[in-house]
Length: 212
Image 1: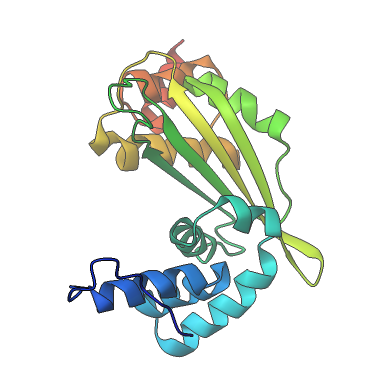
Image 2 (image 1 turned 30 degrees about the vertical axis):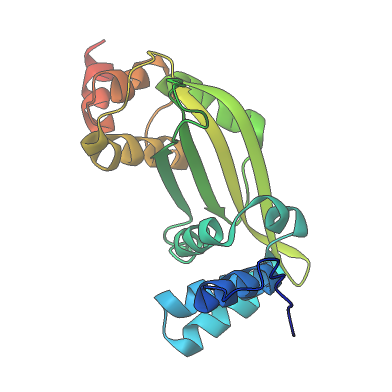
């Protein structure tokens, strides 16, 4: 590949050759190529190649068209945790405002499910009872040899209270609570708003439930 750079001044050009090479490589690499590079940066070579070959076939083309390889890497890390004894994982991350000065507070909530998948209509009551308003949802079905084996549910949500979630409570309270409700090990009712609004655990909510 040869590129010609115009030189209208006819003087010496101070070009960042390495920078140009990086930009050209970025432009010419496919989505699959970029994912492979990211996997090689995170895993041993044999593991990276195995994950690449498997997930580039499992992810549908609509997923690749809308999800950056960097985000796909995170999805793969969660999907790799799924097993028969642990068929469900949940992730929750605050979204940065798309426009400067926009104070709308949103979170990206993802549910990773192995085996029999949820319907979206079944998920909505869980999120409603815990105190989330849903603004967008995306569903991705992963297949192996045309047989579905896992699904990703991606929601753009906002706490109904409008308050920011304390970062320390996400891993200690919110995610365990969501996982317990989705897996059926905790009840699904309006008392679950205490997990989000009061920052208490789903086990503490169960105590309140017995006293109510």
